[in-house]
Amino acid sequence: MIKKPVIYAFIDSQNLNLGVRSQGWILDFVKFRTYLKEKYRVLEAFLFIGFIPYNNELYISLQKAGYTLIFKPVLEYRRFKKTKIKGNVDAELVLHAMIQYRHYDKAVIISGDGDFYCLIEYLVNNNELFKIIVPNKKYSSLLRKYGDYIVNMNLIRDKVKLIS
Image (cartoon, rainbow, N blue to C red):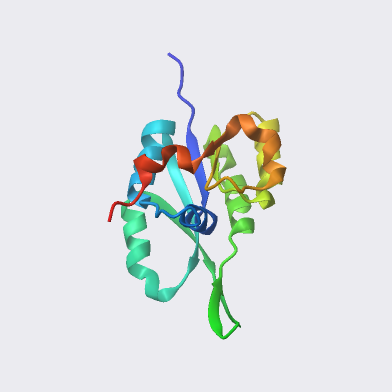
């Protein structure tokens, strides 16, 4: 009997969310978790997200949908008289992908950010990268050499789009 590989997903939530919104649609995170489970047999889906105390209901709903949330404290700053919130999760995603490394056989990285190049290169060199799901057409040119692994979110838009 052939053992099926254990597959984990590591999701840059801001890159994913802003990427699909830049194309004029909103992601249904519940549908997306179901898609990852059914299409790629993702056992664990780690969602890296900035922590904002008033978003507690969102965090609860994401956990109920099957995501394991990894929080990053956010920074608030003012720019052009507007308050901006920054919660860069890149280091946390790479760190947790390596912490979990012994527990999975293949990884799905969900981001178009070139900051993950070193992680993707490591996973490819160890035959442990399964897919890179990029939120839009404008992903880092550093990832282009891994084109065989890349899936654009627009290809699955109808399956994971929020219907309002």
